[in-house]
Each structure stands twice: as structure tokens, then as C-alpha cells.
Picture 1 (cartoon, rainbow, N blue to C red):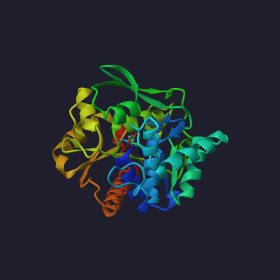
Picture 2 (picture 1 turned 45 degrees about the vertical axis):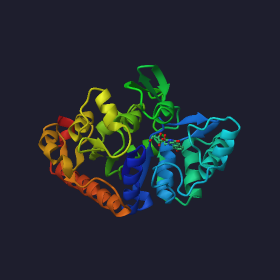
Picture 3 (picture 1 turned 30 degrees about the vertical axis):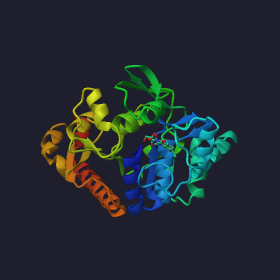
Picture 4 (picture 1 turned 90 degrees about the vertical axis):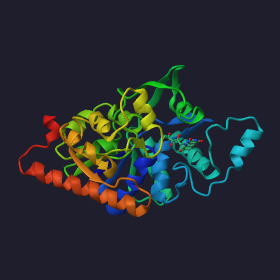
Length: 326
Ligand code: FO1
């Protein structure tokens, strides 16, 4: 069984690739909730919805978020009435938030509400929030601390990012399915998808007990670099890395995950970083990592699973996975 940790658009694509490769009972997608917020009185869960819509075949391919072929009558009408329209909620997407509000209001956990929504949309693979407890990413900029979606959407990541804080993380616990999967003897590997390490993966790692659990498990942890040739495929990862004083490179992603991962999948554009990455105590694997098609998603997923299998064999042959010696 594979756990896939995912955040925004890049993560959703690899989760989709894994879902094309593995049957539902062998995959658990564990998704960041640090981007979640209450907007217009509705619980919005961007990363959960991006993965859910992608697995349902509904995702808008241009934006990566929201639903393809969306209509915007609600937004237009809200604007006419002087309501907030900076965070765009399409008519079909709106139904997701309204329905989620009803499910949570009926006392369901976020995990249970997500299960209801995903199965209603025909998603057969399992998709859970990393935690059912409150978790909110707060962004410190030159103008002070702001909410994540204010930074990411309303201000389009323009402010200089000085620091990130994951409010609630220390008190938060892994969601039941996530905790269960981490302790499952059938666990074969953990895949950290090519999501933004700082915005999408770090909030999950900050949840109480998660980093410790990932360090203690005796199966490979494999990450896929979201930085290709010094650039992020999508989103502000490279800009954030520069603002945090880090070079936007696959090698820097390796440094970020040092001590946590046994393998790092990097793009052919970054093959030159492979030796330096190996010196950090993880196994580099060089391949094409840019996912332009469903076939690309499936083939990257297969390569990640093959690397995990190789590292499991290496570990079985007695040479402990180098992660623990890093
Ligand atoms: N991102 C934008 O840049 N502009 C939007 O108006 C916007 C609306 C939106 C609505 C629902 C949803 O699930 C996601 C939405 N996103 C929007 C993307 C969202 O901010 C990001 O997907 C994550 O928070 C970061 O990955």
C-alpha cells in the first residue's frame, strides 16, 4: 500500500498517475489542509478539491484548480451585489463548498465529509485530509502576517515572503486513515508528490507525530522534485525559495528533505545535481518529471514505484536505507 502526500496542482497530477497504476485499496492520498479557509461563510479546501476533481476527471486543465467547463453566474451576481469576488468560486465548485458545509455541520469529520464528496463524484481511490484538526498556513510578509489565500490569490504571491507558520500543527493529529496507514504492515512506501515543499508538504510534516512517524517507518520515503531546471512548473516555489534565501534547485529540494527521504526523483534537466544529492544520503533517480498528459502521470508514477521497490530490496539486503544514516 502506498501513501502519497500531496498539495496543489503538481501533487494532484502524480496522485492521478498513481491512481492509474494502483487499485484503490493500494493507495491513500493524504492531502494538505493548510490552504483551507472559510470564505463567504463556506469551508473551502483547495488542495483536497484539486486532488478530488483531478481523480474525478473534472479538474480544469488550464488553472489546475476548480472544475472544467465551469460557469460563473454566482460570482457575477455576487459582484453585482458588491460581494467579494477576488477568490473565484465557479457554480459547480460552489456546490462542493455548500455541501461540505452541510456535512461538517451535521457533525462529520473532514475525513468523512471528503469521503462523501469524493464518492458522490465517482472517485474510487481513497483521499483524506492530512488532519481533521484545524491547520492554517500563515504567511509573514514585509507588511505583516496574512492568511494563505490572501497571499496566494488576492495578492497573487506578490508580497515578499519572510516566514511561514502552520497554525494548529502542533496540536493537530494525523487523520485516522493517515495514522492507520502509517502503522499498516502492508505499507510499501511513502511518496512525497511534486508539490511546493514549503507551502504544501511542510504543513503536513508539521502535524504532531508525522515527521517522527515518517522517520521511523522502515519503508522507503520517495520525493519528486517540484523544481525543474531552477524553475517551478507552476506556482511560486522558486520565488519563495529565493525569498527564503535558498537557491531554487533540485539540490535545494534534496537539502530540504534531508533525513526524511531515501530517494529523490529529479528531472533530466537536473541530472547534474545527482552526485551532490547522493552525497546528502538519498538515492537520486533521473527521469522526465514534467507531466503534460495522463500517460506522463502514469509513467512517472510507475518510475516512482519502481524506485521504491529497488530501495526496499536494497534495505532488505541488509544495507540500511541511507536515510537513517544521513
Ligand atoms: N487560485 C487563484 O489563483 N485564483 C482563484 O480565484 C482561485 C479560486 C479557487 C477556488 C477554489 C479552489 O479549490 C482553489 C482556488 N484557487 C484559486 C487555487 C488555490 O488558491 C490553490 O489551489 C491552493 O490554495 C494552492 O495550491
